[in-house]
Image 1 (cartoon, rainbow, N blue to C red):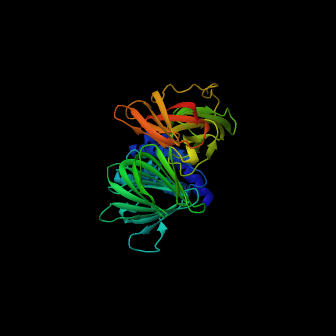
Image 2: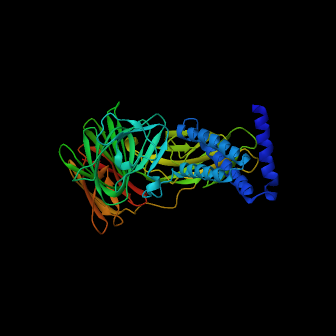
Image 3: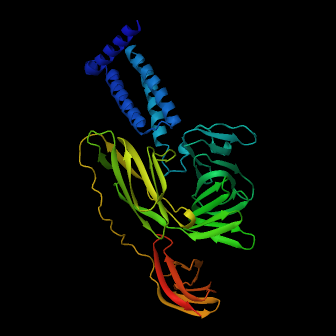
Length: 459
């Protein structure tokens, strides 16, 4: 009987497809909508990895619902079929669009999930439950993510938070500050669209943050390291001796109570593959894709991430110790997203480049051309001129001229820059003999840096 039912189902649906034009318009419309929904489902399947448990659950649930739609069409229940199909299409559309970050204030997209994420309700201790889209962000006081998963939450009138894998963040609110967050472990990125202040705690380090800005923080419990990258905005920290202010493209790292401060490289410029670039495997199961990008400012290594979904919660390739600015990755046919960034001193990360989409097709075609010789970016850092120095052992007074608004560091120490671009710095050079004097001027907007070096003799 089951076999006969399946044969009857197939025959009836074929009849709807081939003779729908001769029947009612409802049948024809439903058949067309059903085909479009199945196409949308196939696209979701193509970009979902085996670890994307939410996507896999939705695919399984949608397949069952589509069979219900088929049964309703067979039984001529066109109105019910249409309602169910509309619900299915809405669920797929919402799920596929939840990775976008360009509309953080839209209340229908305040939570994006990929993988297993749990949350704690305000006022209810030890009440960790699986996080779902319908949970209001104002009801969340804690977030935990699982292996290879992540969550994005835009809190009402507050920061947008992207939490990485295996991370835990506690959220508090008080009268003086709208939000206070404790990053107990893992990595988090905060996006403050307005000028509201907030506090972020990393172990025994308490940071004051002033928006608008983009801040990335990490608390590595096992190694005892904590670090913060300020891509935009201002962060203040009260150290044991003095108060420190950090702003655009500056980072710091704590090992115990010892803090290291450094300038960060700007966001790289992607070169290849192009946006929506097409790569062909020529009927092979995989192909090797060459990724290339340009960095601005000094860097130690580069990081490339390739993901099958635009939020990068799960990644097919993720390497943060690439020595050059290019690498080959073997990919199967599908839709991918990629981005790169530069790592500053002490491996403190700079901002990611803009994300690009890549399509790998199993068909035969001409793959995108890749540069055999990389051209240097045309943009240069601020000019450094009229450099002079006076030696007052054990210190050296250095002065010079650069572009107004630039940031200057002399042998790693921040220099005072006047409104007209003149700068002065006093550095310690107690050791006698030949020493290197190094001046770096950085454009705070682009991150482009110019370096001036000279060997001097300390008597």
